[in-house]
Image (tube, rainbow, N blue to C red; front, side):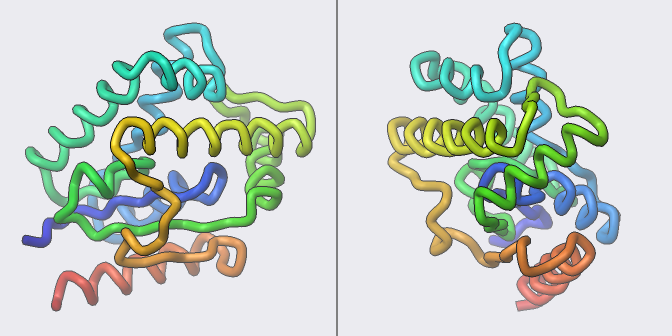
Length: 187
């Protein structure tokens, strides 16, 4: 059974939050972000986003708390877009989107955002530092989700739509997702 829910995941820095906010806006849906929840949890613990990812490798309750929140959200609501690494797994009836981007390009985007507006629990003094931290984060997340659930969230075969955000600007990505979702809903 299809639900009026869109899950958006992807590699760090691929534009999940921006895309999810934009798609939610054009569809008049609510927007939720497990990344925002994760960043708040990191800040509450006095950790960076990379630090909480490393901590979550041994403190499984960190992921379980986020996962429970996502699963409950998917059971209780419809009409929303969520950017989250694992929402596609916890809300299987949703339209599942994966955003792909070269990690070097992702680091450049993340660094530019940090320079412009800052980013909760994430800092970096150079693109190289962000790249290194992003690679550590990606490896940590892949290890955690494999250890917890035997899932590689970067495997594109698990998704209804895969979009390369390096080849499309934000407006194009939002349009691609909206159009594919609308088509999926009508099938």
